[in-house]
Image (tube, rainbow, N blue to C red; front, side, top):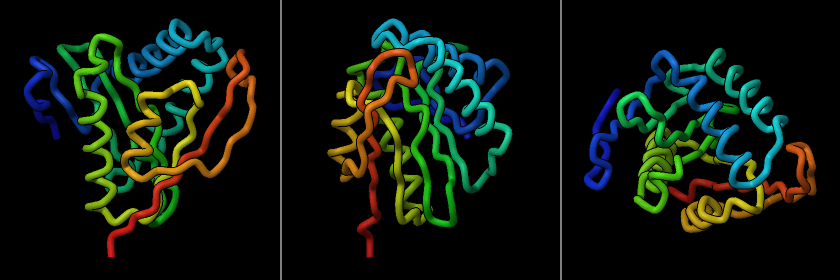
Length: 172
């Protein structure tokens, strides 16, 4: 399904399906931005490439889901739901390009994700991130996610604090 994002995102279309070239663009966006903004090494891009390839190869419609925001053919934002069990999911690959930050596009993608989670009766969602991603953390905390685990890591070439966030559906 493709739909036009709300006002303020002129020319941006959000879709729930990948098109030719999207896989490489999403991996490249992660690698480039995390290197430029945080100094993540090539190990991070390799990690994203490997895990994202697994995700798209094992994608199960109805269980897994994506939201990709594009202007023309350029990826401006992305978020994915990876099913991890009957009612358990993982939020992955959440990113917004710098030119669309602070416009509400990231919040729109995140809200679309959370609406899908609720409609499809997920009881729990988790994600792994790093403590330096403050804007995303604010969204998670506002939505009721909470930190359940922390660990020091240098997996991506620099010292980081990795954090696991969980969310439990409070609906009756």
